[in-house]
Length: 94
Image (cartoon, rainbow, N blue to C red):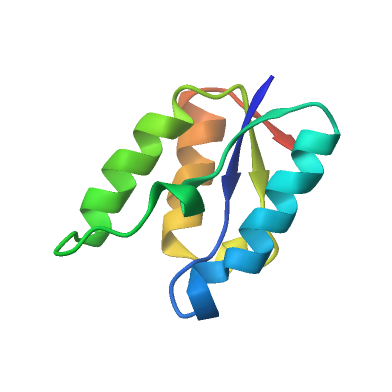
């Protein structure tokens, strides 16, 4: 099963590197394949919309979603949750 990690990045040191990488490690240890948007990298000149387009395309290739702590304060993570749950019918991994 492939799991997408979603959570806050903006306004957090190193775009929440610690949270995303620790979660990726934990999910892999549990036997999941992981799609980690933190690893997709930053692109010069990209808008929030550009990042969301890229990230939603990656999300579409997954079977489930993992929501990091603080995701409700992230507009991008809230959008990813809505798409995952209501468009793709994904379950949330905890």
